[in-house]
Structures are given as C-alpha cells and as structure tokens.
Image (tube, rainbow, N blue to C red):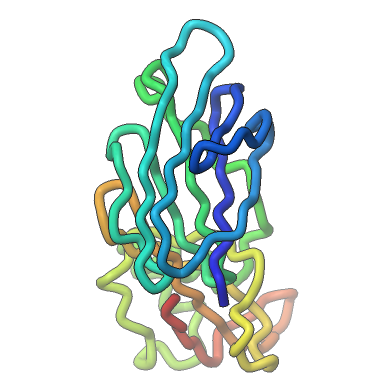
Length: 197
C-alpha cells in the first residue's frame, strides 16, 4: 500500500509540493507519495507570516526525517495516510486547538484512555482483567476512522494508540476489540488485539 500525504495548516496560505504549485491549503490537501520519497513542502501564508519549508523523507513508507521539528508534525495512520501539519512561527507560539475529528467514545476508547492515565477503574471494562494488553509503548488513545484492511471482521470497536517515533512524529497503531453487552446499555471488552502500523 502506498502512503497518502495529507497536508494541513492552521494558517491559510498556498502550497508548493516539490516545486509544483498546489493551490490553497484550506482544509487540507492530499497527495499520493512513494514508499521511498523525499518531499519538500512549502507553505506561503497569506498576511505577514514568513514562508515555511518542510522536508519529509520516507523510507519503506516510514518517516526517516521530518524537519524543521518546531514547525512540521506528522501522524502515520493505519490506513496509510500520513497527516502532516505545518505550523508557522506565529501559530507555533499559540496553544494547539483540540482535534477537529471527533468520534463517540466507545468502550475500547474509554478503556485505553483510562489505562494510559493510570485509572484503576479501567479494569472494570474488561471481561477478563488479567488479559489486559501492555500499553507501555503508547502515549495516548485517539479515535480511529478505519480499521486496518487485515482486521478480523468480528471486532466491533476500534481506536488508535499513539506511539512517538520522533519529537515531531508519531505512529498510530490500531487497537481492535470484541465487546459483549452486559445489560443496561453497557458493554465489556472480551478481547483486544493491537495491530502495528
């Protein structure tokens, strides 16, 4: 599967990718990328902010280099999308706003969020607490838009687990769960499987 580069910026402007004019950044632009590629992205903001140039080097679909670290941030999703966020100097000084993509917090996402924050009550969401997965490599849980292609269809809930690979880049692994109803609209997790990206 070839990656897709999805470029976003909180600052309005126009994009150039490898020297080719690509139009306004708007809500984001998507481009196909090779598994081994060196990509240069330039953002020319409207207004007084200076232009920004970022370098993204991919090796076998993985991020080898992403610079500058203080202005370019990337997430690699399990569906092959590399989400690249560019932040101009003025924007980087401000606090990042909340994620635009929201999903209802299912049992799995609640469990992962609680476990990563150290909440002992997370065990109550599992049918067999002794089978809880090791989450020591992960920093956060996020909603996952799509399950990986190779996922077993019996899994009924999905979430993403964020694993940092550089100060400004992270991989999102897929966490899939089979849940069972336990009455009063509640579900418990029967089985969890984590599939690396």
